[in-house]
Length: 437
Image (tube, rainbow, N blue to C red; front, side, top):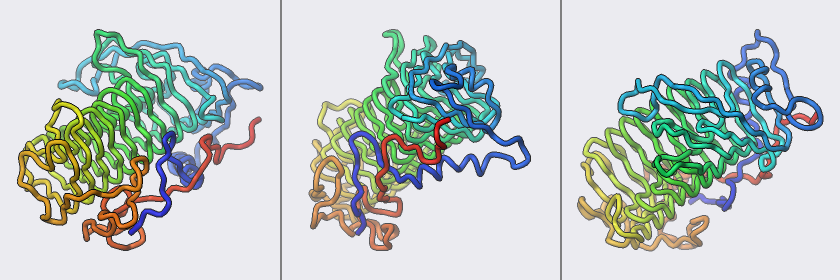
C-alpha cells in the first residue's frame, strides 16, 4: 500500500524544487561541450537589456540563457513552407505554415522570471518553434495568442519541435483557440515532429484548439505530471511511429483522452483520464500500449478501447468507472470495448464499475478472472481519487508490480512502481535563476 499524501491540484501539479532544478540543469551538464565558448546569461525586458525577444534569440549563441522579465512579448509572424508534413499520409507533402518565436541551429534556454506575468503572444501557428535545436529549455512562461494557419495540414501548436531536443517545464500553454470555421483542426499545446526528443514535465496545458500533446513521425517524449484540460482532439495523441513514456498526467475536457495510433510504442501509467467526450484510453493500428495504474472515470463513451486486431499490450491495475454518460459516438458506453484480439492484450487486476452499458463489449466477461473485480473502488473523493480506508484497490494489484515502498501494488493512481508523492513548490519556480541584473 502506497499513496502517502499525494494530491492533485486543480491548477498545477506541484513538483519539488529539486526535481525542477535537475530538469533545468540537465542540458547544462549534458549538452554543452566543455571546450566551447562559455554560455552567457542575457536579461530580456524592462530595466535594461533588450525588449525584442526574437532579436535576442537571433543574437544569442549556442547554450546561452535568456532570462525574460515580466511583460507581454508579441511575435511578428513569419510564413514559410515545410518540405515535410507531420501528419499527412505522404510524409513528403509541402505544407504552408507560420512561426512566431523561432529557435534554430542552436540550443537556448528560455526562462521566465514569473510564469504568470511573462507572456509570449505568438501570433502564429507554430508559436515557439524549435528546429535543429539540440538541448533547449522552455521554463516558467505563458504561451498564448496563436493564429491558426489556413493550411489544415500544418501541425500548429504553442510549442513545435523538429529535429530538436527540448525540455518544457513549469509553463502555461493556454487560450490558443483561433480557428477559421473552414478548418477542423485548431492549435494544440506541445507537438513533437521529426527526430525530436521532448521532456514535457509539470505544465498546465489548457483551453487550446487541438490536441494537448501530440507526437508525430519520428518523435519521442517523456510526458509527466502535466494538467491537460479543455480542448478539441485528444488530450495526448501518440501517432505514426512515435514513442512515449506517459506518467501521472491529468487529462480532461477533450474529445478523447490518451491514444496510441499507427506503429507507436507507449508506456502509460498512473494517469487520471476523466470527463472527456469519447473514449478514455485506446490502442489502435499496430501500436503497443502498456496501460497500468490509470484511473479512467466518467468519460462519454468507453473507458478503454482496443480498436485494432494488430494492437498489442496489456491493461493492468486500472480503474474504469462511471463511463458512458453520453450517447454512443466513437465506441460503446462500456468500461472496456474490444474490436481486436484480447489474447494480444492481457487484462488483469482491474476494477470495472458502474459503466452505463456494462463492463465489457466484444469480449468475454473477465470479472473474477485474473484479479479483475466489479466492485465500487471507494474513492475518498473524485478530485484526487485517493483510496478511502478499506478500499478494494489497496494491495489488490498485479503481483508482478510493487509499490514504491516494496509492498504489493495497489490498483489505481497511487499504486505500481511509478506512483509518486511530489513535494510542494511555488507556482513561479525560480530555482537555479540568478539574481536579476
